[in-house]
Length: 181
Image 1 (cartoon, rainbow, N blue to C red):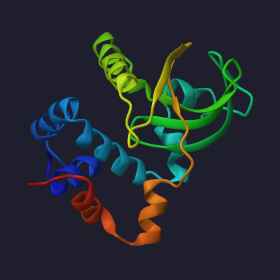
Image 2 (image 1 turned 30 degrees about the horizontal axis):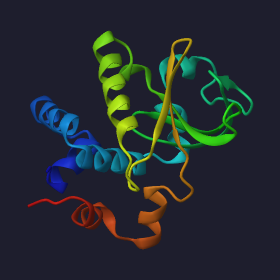
Image 3 (image 1 turned 45 degrees about the vertical axis):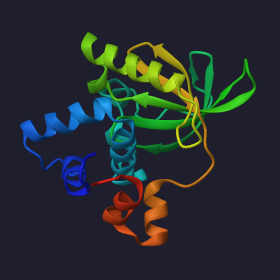
């Protein structure tokens, strides 16, 4: 497991290239740390920064996806957050009559075949999981130049909101969610 100091530095972008590569290699194989890094990164982006987290193609087209925008078989309802990998929207799946979370992956994560294959493997692995603490991945959608991941929509608050309400700080959260021994 990664120690909380390293994870914090990685999310803040203060690690050198070698240390960042080590963290990325570890989160490629450790689902707990991958979730933790993702949640911590998500908590560091507030709604005002949503547009800056979108892919360059989406930013050129006006950033946010408007309500009613079709993405594959899904229909966008509203933006709900942003994280290190992209923006997340509440959407509707009219074929199965359910709400989904639709993550628009930032362009830098899909710009080459190796990155696309890595995302595909990660999505396939997550789609095989069935655990109450892991969202269910339903679908990958390539819409024009953009890649979307359709997943279970969970009612609740973001980690950033939870942290503000509990004034815990990331070190306390890390201690409670990651075995650092």
